[in-house]
Length: 315
Ligand SMILES: *[C@@H]1O[C@H](CO)[C@@H](O)[C@H](O)[C@H]1NC(C)=O
Ligand SMILES: *[C@@H]1O[C@H](CO)[C@@H](O)[C@H](O)[C@H]1NC(C)=O
Ligand SMILES: *[C@@H]1O[C@H](CO)[C@@H](O)[C@H](O)[C@H]1NC(C)=O
Ligand SMILES: *[C@@H]1O[C@H](CO)[C@@H](O)[C@H](O)[C@H]1NC(C)=O
Ligand SMILES: *[C@@H]1O[C@H](CO)[C@@H](O)[C@H](O)[C@H]1NC(C)=O
Ligand SMILES: *[C@@H]1O[C@H](CO)[C@@H](O)[C@H](O)[C@H]1NC(C)=O
Image (cartoon, rainbow, N blue to C red; front, side, top):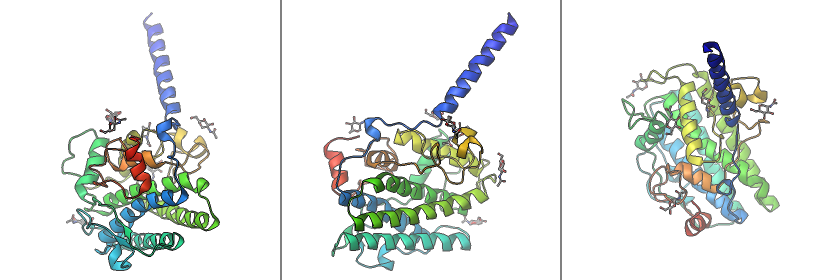
């Protein structure tokens, strides 16, 4: 009798384990996960919010200069909140600077294709350590880590934040590229998307070099941290598993044959796509695309597509 209930218990555990493993690879396709109908131009303008965030964040953290210091008149927006130089190695600094500069080029290319003469209005950005710490705290289910997580304190912490921003850009481009109309526009988004994807891979590679090392000053490893932050992002996005840790269960690894996961992908290792509402739910940190009063974009996004989402209450 005791043996039978033991066996039953083991069986139930196995079932629970397997179903959670299958769930682990599930991507959700309900309406809140679909794209919002919009023109190619409005989708590209929506992406500029993310590109501007990345460029300002990478450049200010690596060399202490914003987009205006590199390419005056390209973007005109409020001064970002909480920018500071990051305490990172010289080799990381050079890489982050390069990737930030490349994104300035992407913004200029958009301006050229859209035949715009005026500076792009920029959104209010929050680049502060506190706003990133909020996401990490959620991952550990604590009100605050002790000491508070500081992305600017060291190379692994900063590169993790840089990688997260990069991921949203790659995922949004994976989402919109198939629907962009016009040769020039398609060439533009393919060129930006592929370059940004390469940048994302470089950042994941840097993180993966220290995957089993602890993240100072804590006792958890980078593998665990990427797992926890990915879980937070996926929970906020509400559309399944699209951000993935660096070490994963086999079911999330390429061909179900590896736990190494430098480059995340779906069941066929295709890039994960995220659309507008999903991105907003994440970057606002609220899990709600219409509550944009915090997170990385404290005043929301700029542009018609964002306004449409607000007006239609597409949370
Ligand atoms: C944190 O809380 C969320 C939601 O309450 C839960 O899904 C998750 O498993 C928890 N994570 C940990 C590491 O306890
Ligand atoms: C800067 O980084 C170095 C190397 O990781 C570390 O030893 C030092 O404590 C850091 N400085 C600050 C102010 O965090
Ligand atoms: C990290 O640890 C995993 C086991 O969890 C191991 O398979 C892998 O080889 C380690 N990677 C590195 C780069 O040390
Ligand atoms: C995080 O790790 C857990 C335990 O290994 C795993 O089930 C889950 O799929 C991982 N999540 C991500 C997003 O990598
Ligand atoms: C990997 O496992 C998933 C279920 O977790 C399954 O849907 C998929 O077909 C498997 N892929 C391969 C290549 O076996
Ligand atoms: C999102 O926030 C709006 C405004 O507060 C609210 O009306 C809506 O119900 C929320 N949506 C969800 C899914 O919580």
